[in-house]
Image 1 (cartoon, rainbow, N blue to C red):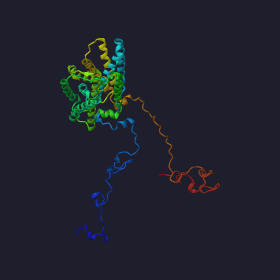
Image 2: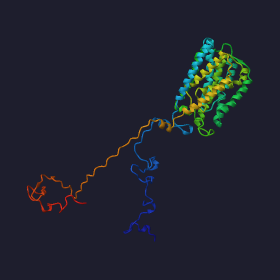
Image 3: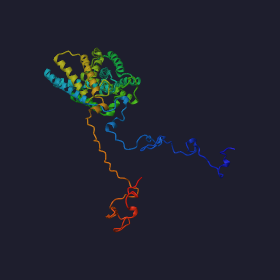
Length: 475
């Protein structure tokens, strides 16, 4: 007969022992959750992890509020760049250098050819700068995305040829169709870049060669008579392009947009695929650069009233314009690695290149655009190194090194308290002379402290002397 037979349950003398297999708790006892089995420490609570409570070894109390810098860095992904805000002092200093250079070239051009800054020649200079500015902005946009589009020059030339050849269909309609065709070419390049995750310069170089081959098979084209002449609005075209360049640089100051646009920039292995957001922004940047280049081509066709395909083919079908725009974008402060760039740098670099070309023409110097592009790229690479060195976010070590030094506080040693020890009393309340009224001393030398006595009565035998019962008591 088994011990735990149910027939014995409930009878007198039957005692049911707890089951110690579960730690003293019956196996069928209801539980309200899994309790953290850590040892309890003061200031901590062993709460179930299912409720998202802190662990037992985590102190509970008020924490220091996060700083503004920490709140701004909380959404930064270290895989897409250093957390923190980029520094812009290097951009401001370099843009000041570009401004002074542009002012010096303007002064030299005025002395060399005063007519270049008046009348029709000034209008031609402004329109030339506006067209080149559109191509440079297109290059800078793709460069900030980390995928430079080297096909912007051939796209602009192909758009100029297409627009001039089909201008009899209406200028506005032809311009829209030209923009859509250029957008299609940009989308093809973008799909190759973000789909296969290959460098933008390589994919766009292939697209540029394909466009150059198409340009070589096209005849010269001219606009229809009576088409829009932009010479009367040359200043407004220049102001509009300058506003576009400066506005784009100002948008680059917005930190989320700046980081989102530059997420295609390699951080560790360049062959690692970025996220979907990085691919989307990079694709939009490449396609947008193609549209801006097409707008520049339309402006060139309207300014020159026609496009000569043979002469364009001799100059590598607009590829020279691409590398010149690349040099201007780099010299303007846009990093060759992507993401980082200034505000006024692109517009000022366009002004410097345009004035330099016109000044050398006025002086009779034969400066080839390819040579100018090589020099601009060389300067731009030096600027890229400066931007990457002095424009990246400050590290915690640099912040600590720049912090003002404060001497540590020294607490003088406290003197040890004097030993004012008094023996404890065994009774409730120690004996204190005079604690119970006035003390009268008799001839025996013992004072009458008034323990139940009044007047000059002799003290009790038990109160004579401290030897019978110590008043201080012992423990």
